[in-house]
Length: 579
Picture 1 (tube, one colour):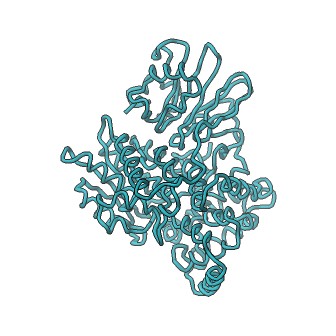
Picture 2: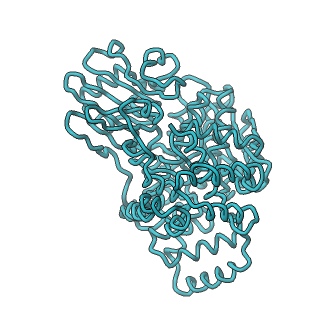
Picture 3: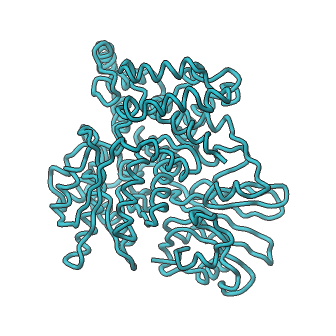
């Protein structure tokens, strides 16, 4: 693989790194470059051109200028400073694998891959932004270019920015395809097979031991199968999985089946609620912003376990977004094609189900009720109803009046709908996929994976989020991705010969932790203490009684507030520890 700021380079950039070493960006001293005109900083693995290091990167920049961004692939955040021209180029990779934060001060711009390093600068004054809190409570994360702090921004994926004495604005240098491509099914299957295989091969090339993080689902199993095929009898492949004692969330048996079929050297870890409060606090310290994704917890432990055995790990992240695997995509497809009679019957069935459905969001009846309740909405608002944590009405009831006004609780929905309606696709699932790839993927999933793997000194690579794979998957007709009650149909077709039929026919389970039960047990007292006696109420942001009612209803099983309470718990703990 190509140049990166690895362990051997850190002594050269230590002056620009945080004390804990997790801020992996800083100027390479000009003496290390080919001349003293420029300095370069890099993070991540540059896949193209192969073997690219500081000198090669600078040579490419001299030829291409700002267009250098279109020549680089992989996971990177990059800064190139031209001392003679007085220009600074900041750039972030196409899909947002690596983060790049910046703050524009009156006389300079400050940037880093960790917000903690940025906030340590004496000139950066960054109070928490109530509008960003509104986005977090709506989506579970703060989408770029916003950050949780006023005055601190995130460079969006596929953007670069040239900073001079004049004000700078980010410029998009690459776009997702914005229309569906007509392609024969047999040709599409072959193209998917070739693109995914090439992406896996690129990310396993080079030195260092490599393994795979598997769940037993389709995406990670395909990645592991391609790795095992390439390895042959030479050393084999190490695989790792995490599971839970709660059977409804545990996929260890599925992963074990895949490992046996592929003949990998397999290891498992079990995540339990014991010590969950301490682990949450560890995650709050690792992550710059609050993140309401409960799978951050097992992902952190899984990366720690894998990092003890391998230098590089490949995962299946992105297969759902790229090839239409989520149930919510199928819901959008079904709603888009539903005639008046079926619409009326669905609404009637949901009305009846609402009286008997258990208060568990994972139950099929409860999901029917949720699906039917959104059928009256325009597609963008329908998809928002599937994705959001809190509605504007729920936030207005929860937040104190002044903070609700400052948070502008209607704004996230307007932003969400506007982003959804862009593009010129033939089907609603493609609009939903594009939305997720532009915001949920880089602002939630990739932040989760990069933070967890960096803390474990593990290089996590995601071949399903290779930009060529992403472009291909998004442009495919919906009929090649969604078939009946199954998504990712084309992935199953392309790799049917490599995996058991039971694996390929398995439905989506997800990697979420069983936080619903934990918030009634091990985490109940920390939840009460943090929400009712902590900064959410103490700062005048939220009202005590609605918070208490949410906790009591969830504990008693009258409502399923698992994701909303987890988001509030993380926010409260973050506020207690925020710089």
